Image (tube, rainbow, N blue to C red; front, top):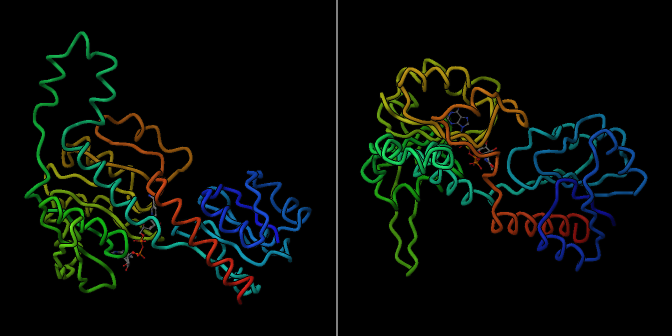
Length: 318
Ligand SMILES: NC(=O)c1ccc[n+]([C@@H]2O[C@H](COP(=O)([O-])OP(=O)(O)OC[C@H]3O[C@@H](n4cnc5c(N)ncnc54)[C@H](O)[C@@H]3O)[C@@H](O)[C@H]2O)c1
C-alpha cells in the first residue's frame, strides 16, 4: 500500500512504515495536482502537516483513500467530519509536539525579557559603531524567576509550559474553558518530582495578574485576545502566541505594543500564514518565528513513529 507524506515525515516514521511493507512517497505535490496524483499513484494514505489541505473536493474525488493523517495537533486544514462520514480514518498526533512548543514559548520569553529579538536585528547593523548606545538600549532587562506566568488554554501544551515555568521559579496561573484543575508534575533528571495542583481561574483574573501571558487554545471563530483583553493586562506585560493565528487580534496587538501597554510579544503563528502582516514582521517589539513550534528532531521523530503505529493498527491489525 502506498503512502504520500505530502508535507514530509521523519526518517524514523519512514523506516517504521517501510518495515511494515508500506511504500512511502515524500514528494511534495502542489495542492491543485494532489487529487490527480493520489488517484494516478493509487495512494491509500495521505499524510499532511499544516501546509497541505484535505477538503471535501479531495475527499470526494479520491475514493480509494483510506486514511488522512495529520502530523501534529490542529486539524483545521482537513474536513475531518466529512472525511469520517465518508468512511475515512482521520488521525493526528496530539501529544508528540507539546514539549517542543513549550520550549519555544520559553525561547520567546527569555529572548523577550533581554531584547534578544531586537538586539539580533541591530547588532549586525550598528554593533561595531554604536556598541555603547545599544548596550544602553538593552540595559533594562528583567528576570523570569519570581514573575507570574498566565497560561490561557490549560491542555497538553499549556501544562507543559506550566512545568517549565514552575521549574524556573515562576508563579503559574491558568485559565481554561473546560479544565477546572490539573496536577502538573515537574520531573527532574535524578528521578525527583514535585507535583503542583493548579486550579484554573477566570481569564480576566489571569490576564490581570500575569506578567507574561501565553496562549494554548485551539483555533476558534472569535478572537480570544483583542483590545478588551489587552486593556485588562498589566502595563508592561508581554504575550506569546504559539497556538494559532487568529486567536489574537493582530491589529489590536500592534496598538498595545505601540502604546507601551505591552513590552513585547512573541509570535510563532499568524493570521495570514504564510504571508504574515508586514506590520508584525517589521515591529521591533515582536520576537518572530515562522510556525516552528513542533519543528524539532525529537517532536518530528515522535510524530513519525506515532503516525506509523496508528497506520499499522488501522490497515494491518484493524
Ligand atoms: N506552534 C506550533 O507549531 C504548534 C504545534 C502544536 C500545536 N499548536 C497549537 O497549540 C494549541 C493547543 O494545543 P494542545 O495540544 O495543548 O491542545 P489541547 O486540546 O490539549 O488544549 C487546548 C485547551 O484549550 C482550552 N480552550 C479552548 N478554547 C478556550 C478558550 N476560549 N479559553 C480558554 N481555554 C480554551 C480547551 O479546553 C483545552 O483544554 C492548538 O491551537 C494547536 O493547534 C501549535
